[in-house]
Each structure stands twice: as C-alpha cells, then as structure tokens.
Length: 287
Image (cartoon, rainbow, N blue to C red; front, side, top):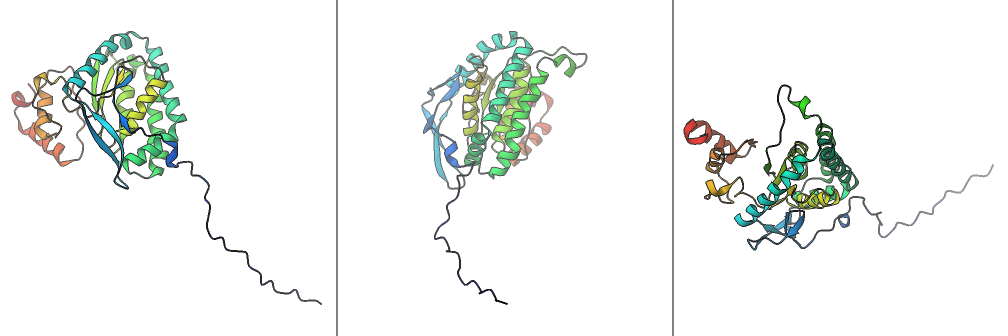
C-alpha cells in the first residue's frame, strides 16, 4: 500500500491586505468648507460676520467653518418663523403629518450618511450612531406624524392649539436624536421652530436642514440659527451672553413667555441653576 507523500508546500503569505470599502466610510458624507444660517428655507450669510470652527474630536482636526448668529440674525430668524407660523398653523393636521412622514422616510434613506457625520462631529462609536440614534430619530418623526391629526385624543378635556414659534436648544451628546425629540412634536402641533444646536456638534443639524429642503417644508417652518443664546425675546434680557450661567436660566424664567419648558441636564451649571431658582423667591425668579 502506497503512503501519500506529505505536502510541504505552503500558500504564499500576502504582502498586504485589501479591504472592501466599509459601508460607513467617511467619503459617504460631503462636508462643506463653510456653512451659513438656515433661515426661511435657505442658507444665508450671518449679519454678525462671525464664524467658528467645528472639529473632529477623534483627531482634533477642523471639519468646517460654522456661522455664529448674533442678535440681528436671531431677530431675522424669529420674524421668518412668525411669518411661516400663520401658514403652517392653518394647514390641515393631516397635511402636516405628510411632511413629518416625508422627513422620517428621508432620514431612513440617508441614515448611513447621518450616522457617519454624527460620529465624525461628536466622536461616538459608529455602532451607536447607526444602530441607536438614527433609527430612533426616524421613529420619532413617524410617531408624531401619526399624532398630528389626533391631538384631541392626546389631551382629553382640553383643546390643543399651537403656541407659535418654539425656541429649542439642543445638547452635544445626542445632536440629531434630541433635535428629533424637539422638532417633531412642535411641528406636529402646528408650531414653527428656531433651533440652536450645540456649538460643538452642529453638523447633523445643518444636514437636517437639507432634509427639510428635500421634504419641501414651507420656508420658515424650521429655522436654524447657530449659537442662539440671545434667543427667547431678548429685549427683556439683553445681558445674556454665549457663556451660559445659572443666573441666565433664572432670567429666562422671568421672561413673559407663553410657555416655558426647561430640561435641566446633569452638568454642574444647570444643577446650580436649579438650586438658584429654588432658593430665589417666587417674585424674584418666576414673576
């Protein structure tokens, strides 16, 4: 019986490995060198003439120059939102729902693009952006699209009505998801929005402006001044500055606004602000 000869040949070891392109590769995102303010359905140059640089935190490399809104820009944005408010409010709730549904579908279609940009500008793992933030962001718009024509069931015994222009401030840790939490219910209820993204993570909010354009929302329904600390009708609080402090929160509470909803995060400044407001008399902080 023949014994098979032992094979001594080995496969050649490759000198290098060629990887297939990753579906979340950076080149899926096109980042402009400069961004303006999204007001009235289009990007415009800031009247303030001010800009700042947003970074990729993983490499500390600049990504883009972002417009920084001043008081005149904020006033312009609020005027545009008020003008759009009358048209958006009069739109039938079922028609508003169609716009929200469009936004949700576009977010799904462009989910990889948004996930990569969220990770680039915020530094979070792509798995979190892709598998958590984007599906939830789209789900919020789907959810509130369903509620838009059912608001009478949401508040039994009350007549739901829009309040007008909603000023919204978004944190850095969930830029797109928190944007969805704020914008979707506001639009569903017939309000228009003036939005301030976090200055450290503004890029997905700016890309969302393109989603608004793609969904063909009426101009002014959603507005995006960048760096909007002098928001909320500042003639009554001109001393507010971009360096936000607990005292500023107390001043916002004193403004004569229709509704005030404040979500206090876990940062020390906001914890001090809550303590400051509790310590102040009702006449001082809430009058």
